Image 1 (cartoon, rainbow, N blue to C red):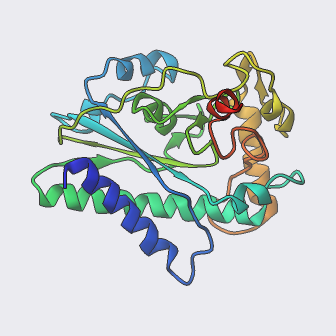
Image 2 (image 1 turned 180 degrees about the horizontal axis):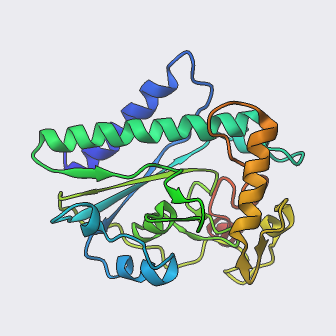
Length: 261
């Protein structure tokens, strides 16, 4: 088995093992995995696109060769549960928390497996690694996912993959060398592809989204309010209304639209 096959197998087995736990209530569809060269010039551009302090792969691991990104798409009932109402559903909030735990397990397993074969790897938390004053993170899993060929961005600022945008992203940096995943050339967002859709903007409770920009503080106020009102304990600063019940929730709608007779 080649190294890409091994990585995919380890991710799949970790998901299956986690989902089989009696305490776990969430479920996931088939994961997507993408690869980028650590030397890809787009990583340097993130200091202009994301924020000036965005790290390079080499900042995380000396002699970095590859960045591995993966997307864990939620099982269909999870986004369906979060369409109605203004508060996020308990099922959505639970999936958010459990998937963060799952990503940490996947990362730990990949570090171990790669290490057993003589490679080093460094991981980055799936969330809550941002500065609460500036609301920016030193490592954007969404942008890394784009560079690694997992999809393109929607108006909701989420990465729309072939499995949609409802799920969670993880990534890690390694000195393993593998061929990069080709980046997607076509848009996955209907609006950005020149088709009619602004559904995500209409669903944003905090009015943080617009076609011209994103108000991070307005979004964060809603997340903190939701966390307080859900009363679930732990970190449940979630919303997800701009991702659920949309053409892009579970699939790439542009590809689906253009492939329909």
